[in-house]
Image 1 (tube, rainbow, N blue to C red):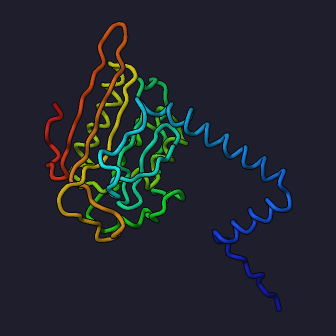
Image 2: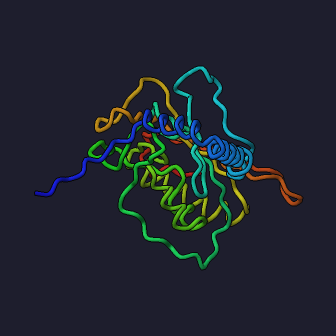
Image 3: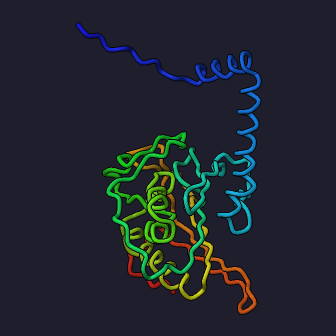
Length: 250
C-alpha cells in the first residue's frame, strides 16, 4: 500500500529559524546575502522606482490616518501605491509615449490575477455578482502596446484594480484611456499619468468581498515636462461613479 509523503508547511517561524541557523553556522554566506539584499533594496529605491515616477512618490497629506497608508509596488511599465486596508491602489503612475503604428495588439486576458504581494487576498472572483466592474487604473491598451506582454500581465493584477460602475468603466473611463493613448501621447510626446480612486463620506464595501472598499469617484492627472518648444502642461479629470456614460470629456 502506497503512502503519500506529508508535505511540511512553511511558516514565518520556519524561515526565521532557517535564517538564524544559517547565520550561526555560515556567517560568511549570511553576510553575503545581507550585502546582496541591501544592494537590491538600494537599486529599487534609488534607480528602479524613480524611473517610473514624474517627480517622486506621492505623499499623504495626513500620514497618521491608516486610510492613507500604502505600500509601493513596482510593475513592468507602471508603479502604484497599494492600500491593503482598502483593497484598492490609492495611486497609480505610468508614462505614455506615441505608440508605434506597427505595434501588434495582444489578445486580452480573460482572467484577472491575484497579486502575491498583497496582504489582502483579492481575486478575480472577489468582484463576482457585486454590480461593479474590475476597473483598470494602469490601462490594458496603453500598457500592452508600450510595454508588451509582461506589462499587460501586470496590468491584470488585482492590485491595479478598483471597483467601477459599468457605465463609468465601459464608457467614460474607456474613452479617456483611448484619448490619452491615441491623442495626448501622439500630439504631446511623453505624458505622465497619475490616477486613482477618491473616497469620501460613508465607507461602502463590495457585497461580494468586504475587504474591498468602493470609491466615490476617480481622478486622472496628465502632466508633460517643459521643453524648448512648449511649456509644461497639466490637465486633470475628476469622474464620479454616478456618470451616465455619455458625458463629453471636454
